[in-house]
Each structure stands twice: as C-alpha cells, then as structure tokens.
Length: 277
Image 1 (cartoon, rainbow, N blue to C red):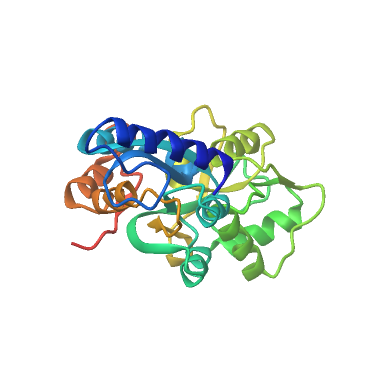
Image 2 (image 1 turned 90 degrees about the horizontal axis):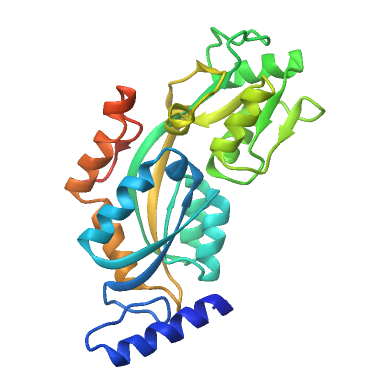
C-alpha cells in the first residue's frame, strides 16, 4: 500500500469509529459500499465527456465518493496492481487478460465499446482515402513519410496502433513518427496542428473541438474498441464501492444512459452498451 493510501485508510478508519455504521474507505478490504473509491480509467472516457455523466450519477445512487485518475489503460492496470486504485475502466483486452491471469482482479465485466478511427488532415497528403483497411493506410503514410502522431503511452489506443503497424509489416521510426506521451485529446490536437495522421477512438475525436482533421478509415472487427470494468483484488481495495460500481455500470439503466450519451449533440452514440442482461 502506498503512503497516500495508508493516510486515506487511517482517516477513514477514524471516521468509522466516530460515526456508527460508516466504513468502506480505501484502507482494508471492505465490503461496505461507502467511503472514497479510486477509479483508474482511460483518457478517452474523460475526454469524450462520459465520466462527467457517469460519476455524478453513481455518486447519487450510492454512498461512495469517486476520485478519478484518467490515464492510459496500461498505467491504469499498473495502478490497480499496486493497489493505488479500487476499480478500473479500461480498453486493452490482451493486457486486461494478463492482469486477470496474474490474480490482480476480482472480476472483469464487459461494459461498452466504440471503435477506433484513422484520422488526418482534410488534404490527405498521404492519399489514404479509399484504403481497404487501417494497415494499408498506415503503409501509405509511412511510404509518404507524412507525420503520424502516436500517443506513445502504453494506452489501449497505443497498443492497438502498434498492432496495426505490425500487421502492416512496418516498424515506424524517423522524424515523421512523433510520440506525444499524452492523452487522446491532446494527441488529436497535436496531430491537427502538425497536419498529421493519428489513431483515435471515435468518441474522443467527435468530442475534441477545433480539429482540422477528418476520418479516413473506420469500421471492421480490427478497429473495435471494447471497454471492461475490473474490480481490483488487493488488500487495500474498497471492495464494497468497487463491486457497487461494477454492478451499477453494467446495470440496465446505466447501459441505457451509455447508449444515449452523445446522441443529442453528435447525432450518433459515442459508445455502445455491451453488458449482458
């Protein structure tokens, strides 16, 4: 347990002694659904605006207060492994499966999906328009040595991008390939400024303002982007709130909320519910 979690645990333990029936904070593996819960999730759920809808709704429906850490999926999984988060909402399936095999997760449930899109400047200097798939488009970008802006942060999006480069038989390198180490919204903005291409989830692309970019490649199973909720297995987990959040986000009312998100503003959903009834 980190020093921060020890301090939080002590504070909540004192509160539990003073206020009868109060408990379930970050310290100790509590099954009481109350107290502070740390959610480690992806920048795409933040940058798309989805968290601004989900978190207040969950707090109203529970006795849990949520602290959100928006990072890449790889970093979110590391936070869970160290016990620095109670529940994860991530989109890097292979890394998630390895995390569960390592015994770090108590449960993993499907929540929703959207898709990845390959975007770039409207002038399309690499002429990727009409490419049959993303690897073909990436090959054209590499041969033209047009700027490609990568997140370079071990996020779910970055992992997907590297998989697509591998499928294309290309190891991207050189001055045309730029790694930002930033989240999706920031990377989209940099790509727009540099008149470069990038891979984004559709939700963040639609929600990010003032971009000089358009979608060129989309659709197909290879670009599907699934999200799962994982309850962390660790001695410091606020298990009560983590389980409550996992149950809540996969419930029918919340799944309907996810399905409606973005429709009024963008005339299309940004995420599609995946939880099984």
